Image (tube, rainbow, N blue to C red; front, side, top):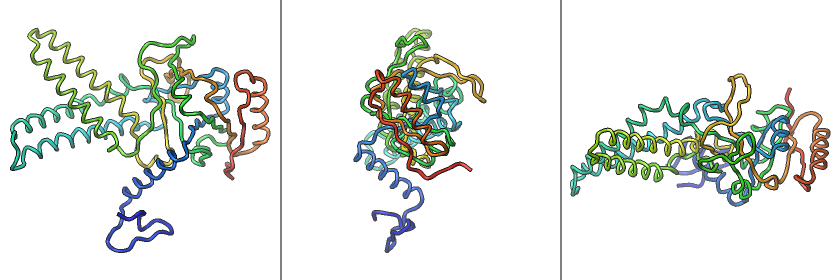
Length: 333
């Protein structure tokens, strides 16, 4: 295939090969990933002045329950893509069973039906996933000084630049008193805009579930069997909810998002137009912060000076931290 789509500005393809829009988007996603890996990009957390002060004062980020993030369909997209992958996996087994050289057609058909039942189970439980099993997410990006991010914060935006290795190794889920909570450690993960990246992981999840569920059929006591099957089903949904928040529609690829995903219960609530939003507290090593960038807009010099004075006042924690201003020539009218 040619290196670029024929309808790209300044590029041309001869002959029969032409890319559709999705192929073009996938190419862009791969190029952005390549660029981020090549430059060893740091992570940016875009926020308001209130959010900036809260993060710097406390040394903590907020994780927001996934049901209350800006994109209400976001988790639904990830679950839907996983369902599509499970359905495709079932189809692979059915296709193998139909081949003339198939040596165990009946077994392959049986496995296909088992996988199809997993698809049905997930589909029937989609409505309970977000409110009951939804994780908490805190969003970052490898895109530095990005116009679309600044627009989201008007003339009061700031970006905190993190060292990804130090951030990822130091994050802990803590309660309101600063005590580390029990349960899985928060995970810093890369958001994928091409679901196929998770196909192998999804098929492994399904294969493990089918094997575990099959083992429960040998349990003689009916009550014990029901309890064990409930546990196996819950583990499937829990694993699914670890994968789903890492998937996002390809049209959001310019954000080049990373996420801190936290499982567990909320620590605090904050009032918004959505009501009392449940959040978790994610503590990190303050030395993971490398820079604070003042976003475009009015009074950028004074806004920069204010942050520099804050850094001087808190030199023990943030001494030597760089404060810069955006180079984007944008102002809100």
